[in-house]
Length: 542
Image (tube, rainbow, N blue to C red; front, top):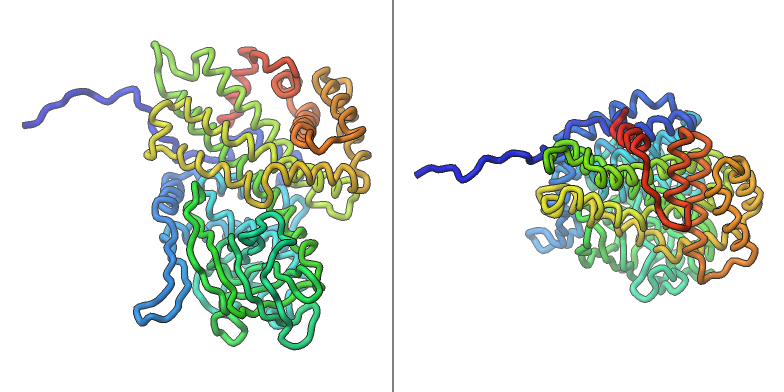
């Protein structure tokens, strides 16, 4: 017997087959404003491909079928290999083809390459975030390796700068593309890497580029299938940085044992592992005792990517919520036309306006390390952006879930995956307190940082009273900054940086609205209907 109990109607279709770049007016404008207009055509092509139903399905599959550790083969021989769903490899191919891992390090890199790369990163984050882990670590490692790659591995440089993805287990000189991972933290220390106990003893001579024998463990060994890792170990001269290849120059496996893969809240497509080094061979980068400084050369890049990744996830959550609200009817009107819902969605769009402007401005600062002012800008606002944006992203995605209601909480929708993914960027590469303490350290020790702040913020002094009030408040706090207030100082600092960018570039009514929402200590204010209409139009590409 066949019968129908009801007809399905008023159920919005999922968001797919959209252009992630062309639908994001703030991103398009910031790309041009910060010097990467030359990449607009490719950005649009990337956005069209990533917004397709096929790409979104790859993101779902890569997380629905997480990596599997193959410790032994059928003969009982030790393998220590990680098997991924084919979707992972297809996503990695796209990332490498778009040079998200090395665009800025090419010999012919154009002015604005950091900005272009940041926009590509934001777009990829909207589809699948786990694959960005090997990409960001490789991106951070390449400039260090370009300077100090051991002589036995000089032939790796073309592979590191390639636009190919090669998942085969082969010697580096036989691969079309190479990826680098990181291994710093140990069970007893976590962030306190100075407490690391992994030991490194020289095989013969000591010093830069020499081989050492490593014994110990890593509590978090990111992307164990990478071609090599940069790791910290205690050498005779102190904590040092080592280049640890998966395969040794003779083609044999290095003595790295994968004990298990981590079962994580989110980031499920990506393999994070615990490993032991059983007399593994690593090559010293730099000098003994210089490990923290060497690793920190990577840390700024990877921290910046944490902020970019969280922003991309937030942008996707808003896009999903907006698409739903334009289709769903409540009490005879589309949800997006309900006054209170318009306020919620417009406030989220306004928040992303500030983040987009600041992040691409920060990318431009990273492009000019020789400029003292730009170096101070990147050094200060990278940890600040990581703290504030990554922390805010958790509530942001939760708010987007509420727009969809119950179906936004169910796994058939992509929002639960975005929600699970959000906390990792707050934790990885230094949690919130670490970032805020770093901000205080930069304010106290970085040359030219106060002069830079005065130039940046005084340039818009007098334009908006809420901004002026916030700047006065920050200057009072910075006279004698207290560690216990580091979070408040960092949050206010980043809000002012975002506000300064918007007061320079955004239409005055919207810039004023942002300052009222984010800097008025009396609380947020209601957005005018005109501002709501303009924000929602910009958030959908108008």
